[in-house]
Amino acid sequence: MFETARLPFFVVAALMLLLTPGPAVLYIVARSMDQGRIAGLVSVLSVEIGNFIHVLAATLGLSALLLSSALAFSMVKYLGAAYLIYLGLWRLFSRQALHAPEQLEHQSLWRIFSQGIVVAVFNPKTALFFLAFLPQFVEPTHGAVALQFFTLGSLFVLMAIITDGMYALLAGTIGRSLKEARGFPKLERYLIGGLYIGLGLMAAFAR
Image (cartoon, rainbow, N blue to C red):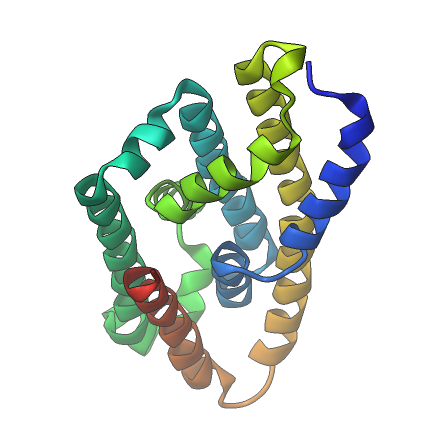
């Protein structure tokens, strides 16, 4: 098992990272502002399930295999970026978004859930993060390195559920207030669609 004396340092470092808005937080904020707090919280759960899959993959060594292949890394990277751009273009140009923005509130939560998992899983930078961050707190001399890796990764995901949930609730509240403003639905379409496209481009061109 990992050294318990290192646990407070891990928690502090993880909180500093989690409270700094990154692509996952921006995705959750966009979803919350678009469709409300429930949709945002569903996105939080789905994103963290995707991150937990990365934890399992890293524990089993699959992430290391992915990162050892430039072709595999690029394929996953660009598939994820393309999916985010697709979501943004759909938000900008779909008939539903153009003519009936109020119907977006009733989009299937299962669809939102599945989208979040896809976005998280097809983010190879998450695999890179876990392989770079978690080993700093693993002590090989304590044995069971895979168990230490899995335990710390799971703890990180649980903490992320709390911090990302806070972002979702705040963004959902702000989004609900803004929806009451005249003219905001049209502005919202460009804001949310542009945010998704920006996230996709950032994922595609990030080194």
